[in-house]
Amino acid sequence: MARKPPPADTLFKRLRAACRDDWLAYTRHPFVRALADASLPERCFRHYLGQDYLFLIHFARAYGLAAFKADELADVRQAAAGLSAIVEVEMGLHVKFCAGWGLSEAAMAALPEADATLAYTRYVLETGLAGDLLDLHVALSPCMLGYAEIAREIADDPATRLAGNPYRAWIEMYAGDDFQRLAADEEATLDRLLARRGGPGRFPSLAKNFRQATRLEAAFWQMGWEAGE
Image 1 (cartoon, rainbow, N blue to C red):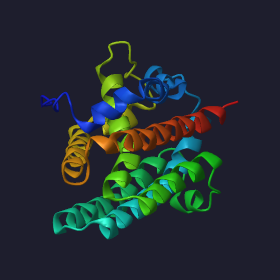
Image 2 (cartoon, rainbow, N blue to C red; image 1 turned 135 degrees about the vertical axis):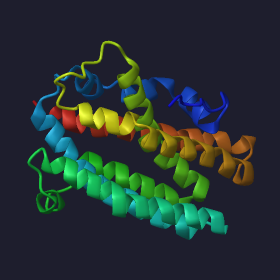
Image 3 (cartoon, rainbow, N blue to C red; image 1 turned 90 degrees about the vertical axis):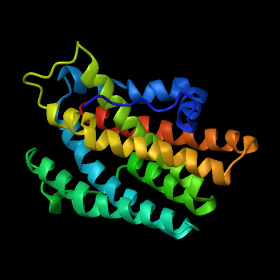
Image 4 (cartoon, helix red, strand yellow; image 1 turned 180 degrees about the vertical axis):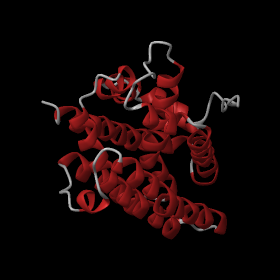
């Protein structure tokens, strides 16, 4: 199904342009390139998967915080739907996917949080607690929108190796229509919240939060990358 491109001047695109170097360091990290050409050591991917399980727990908590921060029923419903999707659907898919890599849910739940996991998840939650719903969504956006962009670029790149690539299922999951629709909805949510809660004077602080979250995403890749050293 052909994807309809979002408007060229969305808040997300403005934020991404404002921290272009950091964004490229995240979306084109060596971990990402190694996923595409199947050269990533399996121990790196397994380490990433375990920490990503822990990350998803805090990501769900962030949607609970979003419901608390909401002042309109539509925003409460959206947050509740996001929380339910993570807890009831995404976590289940993640556990099933990880089982294929020899990682049980009990084993992942018992893992200590890596420094990169702690730094990123607590930053998002702290930003949401200190700010409003727009601040929280901006801090969350590099994750969902970044994964959508990364997977889409990998899938569309003719140099990507799919045949025999052990990471093909990961690529196709995030490049698939279901996740791409979720990302498009999140991009639209940012614009909707900005229209209600923002103005020209808010952009510098939003860009600062977005840049920091993007750097922490890159650090999350780096954590997995260094597991192979």
